[in-house]
Length: 318
Image (tube, rainbow, N blue to C red):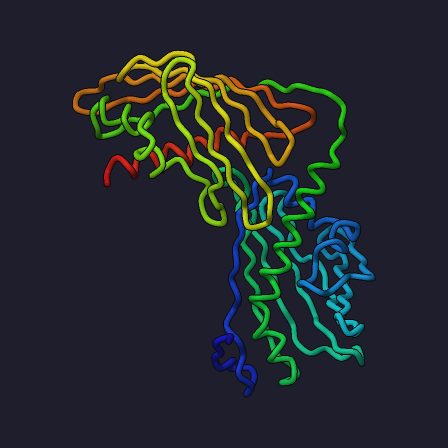
């Protein structure tokens, strides 16, 4: 049940803001795109059992954001609002009035949506604050957390649909990066964290909303490593690697594929070098990637690798 506090401008009890977040295994551009048109919003902007038979969206500051949600019983619930702030790929602010069947406003909602890169994808956070105008709307707001959770499940499906609908023309985009980190640990400790199955499982993982389906690891020339898992949305991702060169405490070279569902999105060559730096170890990771058939990485692989190396550093301190 939503918590409430006194609003000095109203004698009614006003609910606390709702904050909910979700990690999407997709590029920010795709997650952001799903908020920009009626075509997309009609597919996902409602909880389970509801539908969106009508929507009008004008994606610009001051543009309308009008959504009609139809309940399983056939009742229409309109959200009529406007975009008040748009920061491309980063932030949206939408002011909404939620009306009843008689088109009378039941409550107002200010919705702030933020988009941020995170390992393996995009972190979306929704913060929604409310002003109750009709006490009868309180149960709707109390159920907002569950409603938003179900709505974001549908958003995940829409993002996957957008990605799968990208042009099927064959293409390859090449990208490379080099990351250096210094860890307060010996080369042997860092090498173990990279090559021992139990040690690597502490930091090389999918994160919140990720259920591991398969994990195997055999670090030797010709050996393979795989991490496969399903996100809460049902999307399955798979890291599949083959090791080509392993020099104990010094160097690891491997190739890996990344797959989303049945789609291969990239093939990469990665080299990890470990260099002594006093009592510490300097890790140098160089990666050269080929991104396939319209997949837009937009730097997310490098950002995701930075997140993983942060997790590696924390695991060496534990």
